[in-house]
Image (tube, rainbow, N blue to C red; front, side):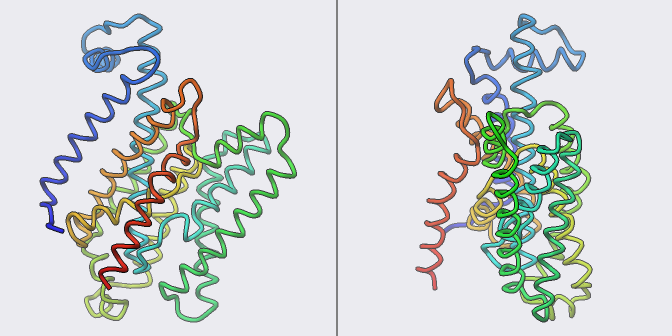
Length: 336
């Protein structure tokens, strides 16, 4: 496949993200025009006056815009984490789910939800992701040197254990309508995303995600193995632990507001790699941009496809991601 210029692709994705956010806000039962969205946003920024009634302005500012921005940030964070993990483990199947981070974050979040301490949900998701990552690396280390294949196998074991504990806790504790609420959260949902969710996810992207995007040269050195990276002056152990911890923090922040959304961190880095090549200086920011665009539209489909009913966005990403993943596997087999 002919490669695309990373600069042109990045500019195209940036424009697509801006358009996607604006168009997604206009879609819904209340018809709101493109220009009305921007004039409403401007009025809240102190520029001009909103042309909308108080009710319609509230739909834009209090409901749709924070939800769409949260979807963009979550998509960017999960895609970025997936790209980093695939580079660190040199395994194309690595993503926040495969290494147990998402399952650990989900276990922490569900635990505090059932204890009635929802205010602690972001912290619990952070802690759950970090504990899962620590267990994965300790288990991989107990088998000998931490290799990519051992890390992935250990992640699968930790993920399965965390998922089993989560299922047991839900089965034992949840009753009545709360069962549907927790199940919806486990399948991924942005229906409750408001401005605090925007603050959490964007802070994680800016404080952790942006510095991670600047480590492309370091990640390129991992492509030829740990010894080659060390020969280039890279502190392999410190870099691996630091980047995995950063990925755990980003994943925890995203899962804390969106629940478990699969395939974003697995599929999108592969798509970007096919288009612009394997260099991580371009791959990391472009994966984040493509993840943002992808999840904005996946969430829009989730809330409108069966209107007035809404389905968890994790179902939409799985229905789109699974066939793409199968296609990638087929291409990989034909190229070997």
